[in-house]
Length: 255
Length: 255
Image 1: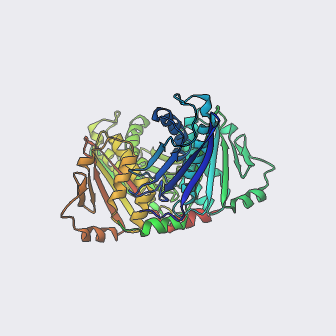
Image 2: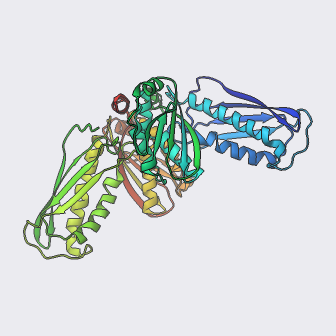
């Protein structure tokens, strides 16, 4: 099953050793990461002349921070695919052989940027999604721990339904941090929504003004930032809310 | 928040060394395991005369197979509590000092039975639940692996919405087995619903008749059995479906 409601494309240009190359990407899938045995497919092509040995590590790192950092409902596909190919047909540039070559800095950044763009388009088209949610976790024991906390928040049905209901329910975020099972310091926990700190040092700010946060929750772009107060690990994940539309799509589907 | 819609009570009698003792239990919580900082509370009392050193291991084992084997939406509470106390005011019986004492066999079985009963009442009252689902996993590498597979199935929004939609979607069950990350043999996988084998040896039975399974899915008690074909591990978990009612309750709630 796929229920794509809009085409997902992204393009970037990058400079390698003075030559300007192009990166184009397309993706399908809105049931992703709820694909019901369908597939999320993404194809990325560049005219840069880069060998697979260079592209593969760049791609792995960029996918880790983009497609592997999105979730719709926590369910997964059997055959999600992301393919990057380089035609080498663009403007001539130096033959770069090492993925860590500093001449690839711009290409690396633009590739990641493009993949984040595409991945976020998939989330925006998530089944029944009415809001796009960015979860930023800082202060974790490691980047991996930060990601697990971020995904626990992003996959929590209680957090997702609160967002659907436009409720700045920071208690549910605390719950999700807790169930992630990673180190977090209750007494240093900080939670912000829409850039406004709601809770810090583990408790609601005495001067917390709900009005601007309530206004933020009514928008379509929701921003949640959590600092768990134990280290320097950080991660960003993206998700959508959980709405009646999701139930409609998935309960009415027939296998 | 709690939205209990019916009282949850259970009682059993057990024989210890010829004396008949009583075990009574009550529980609250329907947002459990979606408790939004509320609590699932369960209190169990018996008139048997058993020391804490005997009761604790019996309780741990029974809780593991009952309250720790239920899920509504995978979200957890900060303060779920289950308390067992023995008054010692019942009929006289031998002073049993070891949890493994064979004279406790009946008490142990009845305690587990009572806790399963109570835990399943909590699930039946799950937020928005329209169906009660029993997931039995066999053939796993270990009992713990079987439980993780069972919970992956029971917590999958795609499986839960399929059940709400009365669709015997075995593909979504295969997906959930896959995402559990435990050993499973694709070519020996067997899936049954309502006691009727839908797929075996990794594929749909050629003679599969959908009609009786479709009839089963229309009922309120759904039975899913999965054998993953690699070992002797087994587990049972209980859950409910994911419906519009869940969204109503949790999206409309205000913190």
